[in-house]
Length: 387
Image (cartoon, rainbow, N blue to C red; front, top):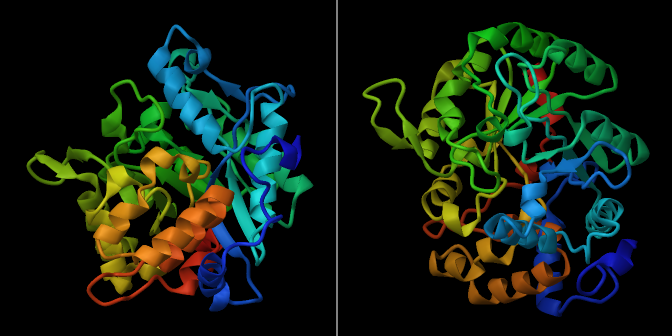
């Protein structure tokens, strides 16, 4: 297990080519040496092998559901783990090995994932694709305090939602993750107001997916990913980080005609509202995936005024899914050179987590040559609730 469980050469044992090493050195060269690189979007995964409560819906591994099984196999291959016999332990060991292979300290925010719940507060197993309990990420953070920050996940319809929120906050949790489309959470539901008020009082920041969801089955609930539905927690004072900057799909324009509008445009509308200036942010996870190109990435690179409201996120293990990472397209868009692409592809084969960071530090606006600043990649979400 550990490094021996990894697909391909273990990270950190073989020197990179001079071109790849030069790209890595440039990516880290202007960082503040007193602060770590921050990745706010790293998924915890488990099959429940160690009695830790992690869960993956059996349909995702069943030969009776070949498309789901194929999709799951792509994600599993991206983790660098060979086989499923010791997947839970191996997944974490490979992740930690990849993180510690960074030339500078890295702090990963490890995401829990609550079950889907019905409106009456009871679990909905049929809509639960996978589950990672809060205790799991809290325990891992306690074991690796220099590397892991816990990100809890609490469905606000749970009968014990506020109690669980308070218990997790008492253990140091300051960031909570939602995937509304998959968890059956309507962020605009007034019934969740007491939960939002308690979040604000405890200084817990909401990291929520918005836009269309492709990686997890959502069963007709894409409307729950409408960025405009986040106005309710924002208006109640909750600080919100929108995962992926809502960069995929379309939703109804709830402010005006109800016509279909790209989710990214709805996200930008919220970002442009002065009242949300200090409470609304976006993360860059998945922003470079082929199905999200080119408009959102082009816009974010071309508008430096957004830099202070963006955070780095990898969406790990998805950077290891080769079907969604097309560096050739980034060359065509003028954001990479052919030489940078070759060096990045070399890094990807060794360490997809490092690749994601170096890629985002290398990308440039084709019109101006501007790259994202170092400060973006060291921004700590735990400090945002105080703004």
